[in-house]
Image (cartoon, rainbow, N blue to C red):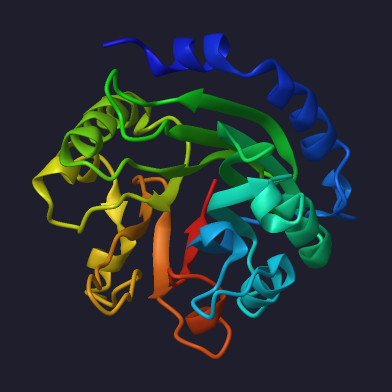
Length: 279
């Protein structure tokens, strides 16, 4: 099995690299390093959300509606999946730019595939400075669709944390591959620094294909015994969207909001957690 850190260095897409420099460091946010107060801990509101390229269950497209949905939760960190950038189906919108501008957050986008004249992939937004980013292809040799893992190193003042956004494949064998590969990575990283791993894993919590990953990271939903489904389609309602953490992160709140915006803006519901990071 290849070392994922080596993969990251080799597979960072050149076009993405240029975009990351602009988006992560030429950011719309007004936050600066000196604005972050010194503290013995920091509490973070984390959201993960598969936005279904901004198309709601009413078949209407709106990136601003996604931003307004997120705005309700006052997030510090956001992991997005199924994000369009400049595609024909979503009016050529640079969705992450629109959402980040509305929320006033730092941002980074990680392409997984070229799609309909633009790009499609994962994204991360942060109220805190993003000091480095990496995007890799985590697809197995045979896959239904290329899949990517986006990682941002976030500076929260007194230490850094690793924040991830991903979307696993839809086939069991793909999910097993993703889970095994990443599980081995997080086993090595367990005690190094805080890890928050978010995404649409396309499988339910106790699925055997997710076992290697779940053995290394804690599912906050399971920790709080919350079984609310995050993909509430009439024929296939399941809990498939997750916020996972390592032992450097302490969770104290978890919810799957069911509100006027969240029930319409995407075919997934957002997942919200509050966590505490200490030195």
